[in-house]
Amino acid sequence: MKTLEKEVREPMQLSEFIAKVFPDCSRTKQKEILTRRVVINSRRVTRYDFPLEAGMKVTFVGDENRRKPMMGKMPIVYEDRYLMVVDKPVGLLSSSTNSEDITVISQLNEYFIRRRSKQRAHIVHRLDRDTSGLLLVAKSKEVSRVLEMNWKEQVYDRAYVAVTWGTPVPRDGMVRSWLTDGEYCVLSSPVDNGGKLAITHYKTLKNSGRYALVQMQLETGRRNQIRVHMREIGHPLLKDPIYGYKEDNSPLRRLALHAFRLCFHHPVTGEDVRLETPIPEEFLKLFEKREARK
Image (cartoon, rainbow, N blue to C red; front, side, top):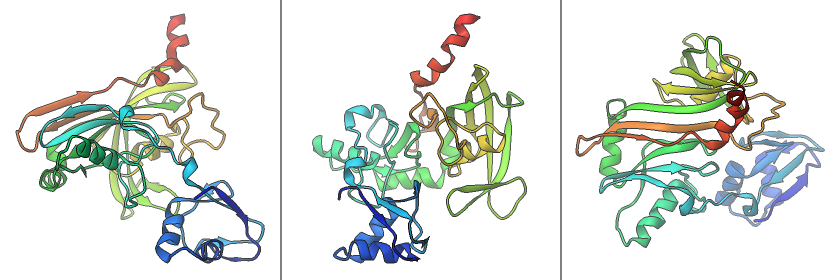
């Protein structure tokens, strides 16, 4: 499918509009288009009942605009007969229900096929598409199940590094709130509103006045937790279109978030595995001039 832009002629729901634009597509295909490829007035939309008005521009994003990282760009940091840890690049989904998507799981399964292995990759936890870093993957359903059931006991340290707008005050601290899924993003409440408790510990490593390099450790692992919490304290991540500033004149071309440390007790051998990746060079370059002046 090529990228296609259509103008709405009369009010209707988004699902109706898709059916009119793609009358020969099955309902399953129309639903797949809705969940992954619809942009309305520069905003991605997935609601089937989204109300369209006359004059709106609806863009259906084609395959030529979908990024397709190759396996060579996803280093394997750790591997044994039971599991593996990869350094996920920016722009790659962890997993997807759509078999056409290029994901960590699909690439690892191709890796197994090339090695003539009967093993298959099973997702244990996820990183957002635009977050890079260490991702743990099981090689069997049994190992995956053990990790999922005992996640807090097995995985005892997950740390991220991010670049924020401005320096958090205090420089080191903790953010605690309750998160719920909103229509377009995750919502945060300082009091228990029935959402999921989220706790993030942060520590400022460097600052340039305009930016800060901040390390985060998760006490809980909620969706978009770090991005929401940094926005809550007034210092969102660079290049974050959902939780950042509307006018984001960032020198980076990616979301400034990287999962650099992962420590876990091996679910089969009991071995203590501690893994780290370097802080992305593009993050560190933002602080070179400041350090050179010291």
